[in-house]
Length: 71
Image (cartoon, rainbow, N blue to C red; front, side, top):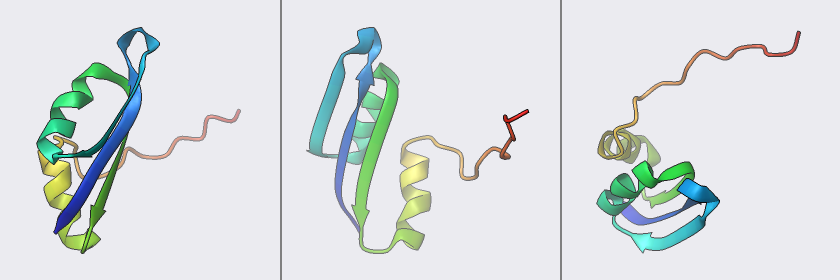
């Protein structure tokens, strides 16, 4: 079960923002205003809840391959 969602970030024009104890749907809508966003989700079972959270936030499950940027 998803217990709480909080987020912070830097919006356009470099203005910082912080929202605590919001609904996941609000976090998904707010993602579009930020250039840099941190979302914290507190859950009972991370294995069960992660796919649901990623889907709501429209985030693809899986990471891009790591690249070595050091010459």
